[in-house]
Image 1 (cartoon, protein in one colour):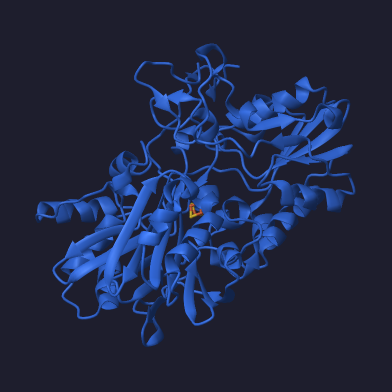
Image 2 (tube, helix red, strand yellow):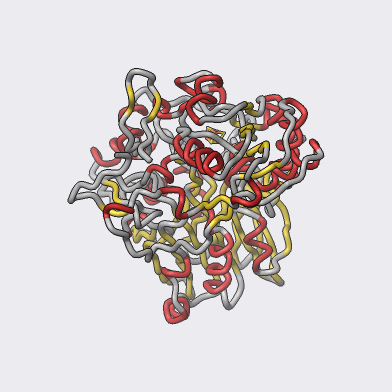
Length: 511
Ligand code: SF4
């Protein structure tokens, strides 16, 4: 069985109707997940309410926890909780978050449960007052730094890598808060876009390689910070510019200041933000996400053409790529799957016998659109392949004559260590199998992936702007020698639930 029914199993952290002892079910383990979204406001009397709206627009970047820390005359007020933004914040909670500055965070937990102590922004008191920090990304040397700090007597409150930044900043002997932060960040390696406040200032930082996005906006006289432009749009804020890689932007009573304390290094934007993670109505790294995804679909129509009656997407994130394929090929686009957008965390668990219905609760095929058709099905990625296999089986059951699968990114062969939750590489189907073996396993007539050159070309930027490690296994930072052991334990737990059929090395799917 793909899901454990053991008595000690609990609900999947995203699909409460599925029981699993590891916190994430089969369907959720078969997608890459963004870990966090950031939003901040400096200089607006309704800072917390605006931050709430911004986090709402960033909900796709993390659904397991949300928090806001506001500053009222330098005193920090925090409210954090497990769940969706709308679950965590109620009007009376927001009213208590007084002050004209606030930072907020949405989080997707990468291991175990999203316990409250890990929900950000992380607040802390130290010898010079209070601070709070919200972090998007992952530090590859966090375990090493943490061990050293713990040996020297530090006591950690959470299990997040982000807390090491707080400890390092608190120990810094520099004068200004922004300098303490720079001192701390000079000791860590990896991906970080972050917002931090000491109650007086808000500091927005992007790591020198610029893995994760971070925008600066303006609303009247207020300065706004957001992971994506869709969050600026929701409050009608003006897009000012992206915070540059390696840049520290400080919002204070004196206005905005910009620092670049670290040596310049080549940029390494996470290309997966453009392929899958960000909202299509956002602009990141200077390019429109929607435009890139449509171009990825056009590329596939040119490099992997096939005669078909219909182009379909695996909704919703693949819709732009499927539209691009349809425009280029001239075949009609149709909504062959309907996604249920209303599956919430309060779903009543069904009886044990009907519990194992994984993706079906989220996606249902439209039989009248599919029956007797030769179908091009576009998806943005194949991670483990188990979900692809299931959704293709649904098409076959609805009478699809042929199914041709097109994937808008190249084969994923390596895990991400920079803030995207991926299974261990042993569970990535493309790291273990050829395209032909994958085609046979997922049950399609033809299978074609995007090429790396096609992926880069779709962005309009050059290859040297991007991290491509999950497609190339060529990581842009050193990974500490102990990362596999410590990192796997703390950040990259393998949550695959499925037994492996060792004779063919492919996951066994129980229908
Ligand atoms: Fe993005 Fe992949 Fe690089 Fe991770 S390894 S930062 S997912 S491109």
